[in-house]
Each structure stands twice: as structure tokens, then as C-alpha cells.
Image 1 (tube, rainbow, N blue to C red):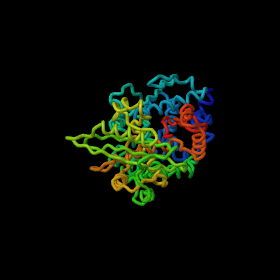
Image 2 (cartoon, rainbow, N blue to C red):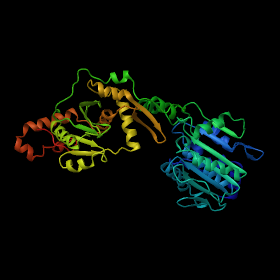
Image 3 (tube, helix red, strand yellow):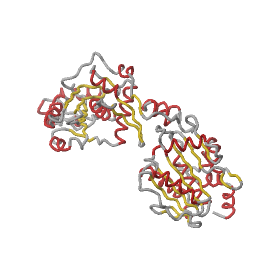
Image 4 (cartoon, rainbow, N blue to C red):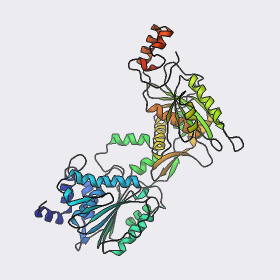
Length: 491
């Protein structure tokens, strides 16, 4: 970069961003930047008064998908390149988000050979070679940031997704550091949240209501980015509880919990003519979800299958209730699973490995077992899928007052890592969880098509039983085009 370019960028920071920030698509920021970004995001970042930044504390509250992390990383590099010996801290909600922040920073440098030589990238720090400016990425779930030393006369703090931070310790440590320097800025890029006792709400409201002209809030109503389409939003609305959709996409602060489904939505899924099935139908793939509770909670087991239309059907449901004196016997559950395996054409069983670890070891040679680990991400997927099936009337269940009571009692609970379903205080959700586990596996797997059934039936009729066994028709893998479900079918 020559001196003329550098001189231009020192006078026009936005020119640096638009010319030197290269996006993952290979385009430069200036090629795709939108008016709302220029006016309400980058404009206030560059606003000055008496040659000093006009705004010291900026709160950019934007819906999901509005490039908040990318914007913060771009500002970090801009400051490190143009602002001399500045200490920059990019603070994230957790270690995973901190990793994404670091990857965004490194990605900008890798994609632009013009500015790459100006920086030295280390594991915990990015340093501008000419000025000594440094960028460090921290997370709110890491040890405290109190005592961070070596502050220069300039300090820039970038806070990513403040609504999701684990407590306020990192915020307090970083914000109190601004008292040590004369030239400081704090920039928050965040979704709307749900906890009005959180530090995110406190700082947002400070920027909204304070008479201090150095504070700035940008919080538009709903989606501003043209790259998020109405079709995208319609899909999101189908798979998210109303409160979560309002928070993530309408940019509104909402309550932290609420009912997951309505009575009307559930009634549309209850088929009064459908009954529990004693055995499976030929050539149908079944899935069994098992949620184990030995003492206080129930153990529940649900059998489902998916129709060619995509609808998931509940075929059978059983529960066991234990107590401290008489906990549920694992042997009783194992006996039931072996019986279900026989009655429903050797289905796929979906279990939490931590709950039934010893059972899996004993039964793995007899049953087709898949693991479902109860992580934050998997529970979110499970919850979203169950909600989508019910809203789209793609779930068919027989009348069962206990199951219906559990489903209607499910609440949407928002957390710092997303949202999940859970039962109300004093309630149960074991039946609903077992159903949801089986339904997720069924929904994400192909249904047996009518053509596959006909082709298998024809070959089945043409071969005598001994030849059928020799040809491999103990499983569907011997039929061209038939998925391998890993189980033996009734012949």
C-alpha cells in the first residue's frame, strides 16, 4: 500500500473498509454495502466532533443474519490499521463465538494480500507490525479480564452478542478499563434479548435514554438486509416459537418463556380414528425413541414411522413410573425393547448413550441402535422439528390424554445458547421427549417409497423362502434402490 492510499484512508476510514475488507464471497465490502449499513452503522462509527469520536458507546441492535460479527471484526482491523497504538479487545459470549470472531479476523487478512503483511497473527493476538496495535479475542465464560495490563492511550472494546453473555463480569472488567485512558470507544453488536435484568438490557436502555450525547443506539424494527428474503423468514417463522422469532427476526425484546404449541395446533394432529399398533406393517421403517427416568421422571418409549408425504405417525407409546423405593428396572425396559424389535420389523432405536450405556452394550448385537446425545444443539434441533411437525400438521398421533397433556405443557425456554423445549415446573415431558427423539430421526431419514414396496414385494413373491434368504432378502439391502436401514424385515 503506497503513501497516497494510506493518506486517503486516514482521512476516510470508510474508504479503507470498502476497498480493503474482502468478504468470504470474494467481493469487497464496497461492492455489496447497503444504505442502512452506511447510514446507521458505519456512519456513526466514523462521526467526529472537534476531531474526536462523536460517540464513545454505540449499541447496534440488529436481527440475526445482519453480519454483526463480521462488522465488528472489520472495525477491529480498521482501527488496528489506522489508529496507531490502540489496544483492541473483541469480546464474545463464549469460547465458540470467540473462535468465530478470530476466524473472521484472520479470514479478512487471508483474503487480502495488500494488508496481510501488515499484521502478525498469533494464537491469542493479532498485531499491527508498524504501529504495535493489538487485537485480542476474549469470551465471557473465560476467567476474568480484570488486571489486563499494557493499556495504551487508546482503547477499543467490541462486544459481540451481549445478550448471550454469561453474567456481567467481563463487561464490568472491560468498561471500567475505559477510565484509565482518554481515547476510548465501546461498540456493542447484539440481537435483542429476553432478560430485562441482564447487562445487555441495562446498556441498551442507557444508550436509548441517557442525555449523554456520546451514547448511540441503532435498533431498527425487523429485517433491514436485502439478502434475507421473505421466503427465508417464512421458513423461520414455521420452525420457531413466536417469542424466539420476534426476538431474532423482528428485533424485539420478549419474555424468556412461553407455551410451545396451542390446543388448536395439537387437535389438528390427533386422529380420533387412529389407535396404538400392536405390530408393524411389512416394508415400513420404524424408529423408536427412548427417554430414561428411573426414579422421579418416567421412562418413555415411542415408536413412529414416516409416510411418503413426510408426515410422522405415532404407532405405539409406553411409559414406566419409578419411585425411590421401586425405581424403574432397566431389565424391564430391555425386555420391552427386544419385544418391540420383534413386533415392528427390527426398527432403529434412538437412545441417549449416557442414560442406557450398559443396555446398549448388551443389546447392540441384537438391535439397531443409534445414539442421541442431549447437547444444547441437539435439543434445539429436536425442539424445532417437533414444533414444525405440529404447526405443519405433519404429526399424526392417536388420542392419548397423558401425551396431549405433556405436549400442551411444553414451554419454550430461551437461553444464552439458543432455545429449547421443557416442561413447566412440577410437570413431566418424558412422553413428549421420546416422541420428539423418534420423530427427529424419522424426519431426517428417507421414507420407504411406494415403488420400493412394490419392487420388494414382487421379488419376495418370486423367490422361495430358502432362495430368499440366500439372496439377502433378510434385509432390504438386496433390493436395488432400497435404502439400507440396518435392520431385518419380516418375511
